Length: 144
Ligand code: FES
Image (tube, rainbow, N blue to C red; front, side, top):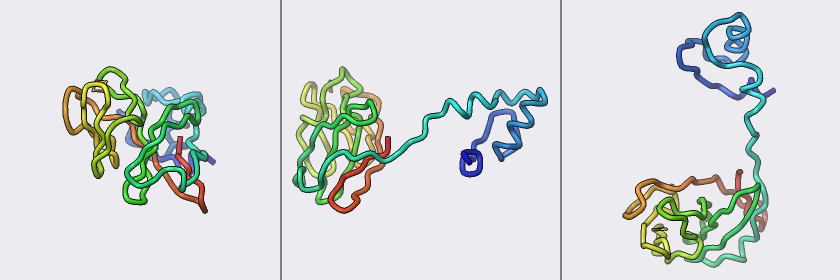
């Protein structure tokens, strides 16, 4: 059951357990959380993004899964997934130059950490979203 593993904290509510918060809210307490809030949360799942042998070390590839456009990177045999859209003006990070654990946007040269999505150099000011990646057999799977 979702509430058994989803441990959320609601501002203004000192109850840690979702079931307790739900009951608290149903009683009219000002938690601001209700059943509909929990049921509207999409469940993340791992989806196949490609084969491990399709992306050589130091390379990237654009993939579209789960309604998202992602850049999938191979850094020395470890795979990472970031949003493919640069936070500056939308450049495709999957087409950027890769140096170690850093990718440079092909449009205006903003730099991002491939492992974390953190911005490392301007003109972008915000990092990009990072997604968990696992390799199952020869399949690369991304949690979206
Ligand atoms: S679009 Fe990426 S640096 Fe401008």
